[in-house]
Amino acid sequence: MYEGKVIKFYREQANLTQEQLGREICSTTHVSKIERGLTEYSSEITDLLAHKLGIDMDKEISNISMIKEKLDLWHEMIIAQNTSAASEIELELDNNPLIAVSEYKTLFNLIKLQHNIKLGNFNKIQKQFKHLPKNIEKLPDFEKNLYKHVLGSYNMVMANHLTSIQFLKSIDFESYSNPLVYYDLASAYHHNKSPVLAYYYAEKALSLFKKRNNFLGIIDAENLMIIQLESDYDREFSDTVEQYNNLLSLCDLVHAYDKKAKILHNYAYENLRKQNYHEAKELYEKSMDLKEKNSAVYLLSLEGLVRCGMESNLIPEEVLLKYIDEGLVIAKKINDTLYSTILILHKYQILKQYRHYYGYLKDKALPYFKSNGYIMIAQRYEKELFTYYLEKGQKEKALEIAIPISEYLDD
Image (cartoon, rainbow, N blue to C red; front, side, top):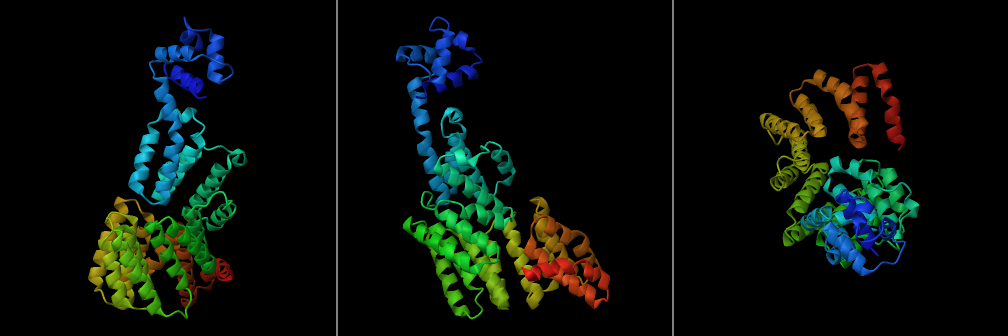
């Protein structure tokens, strides 16, 4: 089945014509038909062609037959969040030249895209999309649904949450039962401010993760479910405390310290919302201790700690400014414009440089938030700027942003 494709691949690699390869073995026409799978051929001829190309045909055919098995394992490792194993398989497949002549080239590119989306390797993603076929309907069912999953995941990380939901909802869940689809749907609904649907799909993801004994997935799904429950203002916070503590214990049990850092951050945020400032401060600090310092997730918790200090006066101003300067150095090092922008705003506030604060907010921060899809952040700051202009009697400037604010309120 694959002999002809293997011969063509290595012939082209060796820069040989069909006539040169077939010389003293068989005719050029026969080589052409073998490569295209249009004729019966003896093993003796293919062995002679393979010998001339310097390859072991049995080994090459075995190599191709193992590709699907490796691809399936790679996909499972992505679902299991076994990043090291997934990356090892990716490297192995990257070094397998016969993927190009196998029937799994599209599947390989789709799984590679999914892997890099989950890792946040956005610099690689755009190039990989170019290798995918344009007509999704001609793909086998599994690849078609995986393609939709990839598009849904990609649009979610790009903050196109409605588009993400459309792609994910179009998946045939009967033929593509993947807990990550339900988790991604839950995440997209969460970002779209739909807590009921977010909880519904997170619960479905949780059920599938439990069937697989996927503890990392269980932690993620339960964490997302807790966040949705916090939108219920009648809920007892003691229930939230118990659930977070149970999740943190599970993280310790499976040594999932990156997950623990994320949960500590979310737990800190919920305490900040409840104005439990002492608890929030301690939890933000614990989260930061578990994170790589030169990273966006570290800046996320550092910014939360600064906000906690600004609201509560628990942290002296000079210490807050030290945190901000530390964060600005990290943001510059990792080229993170989002947190450098927010931290500059905090710095102006702490220093009570309000003219600089509102000028920077109007001219730099808001345009950046809007153009890069940080809608919720833009909403918060735009309302603040609107109120500021009204208090200053600058009605014309207030009117400039009144229409966008009314749109947010309608949503």
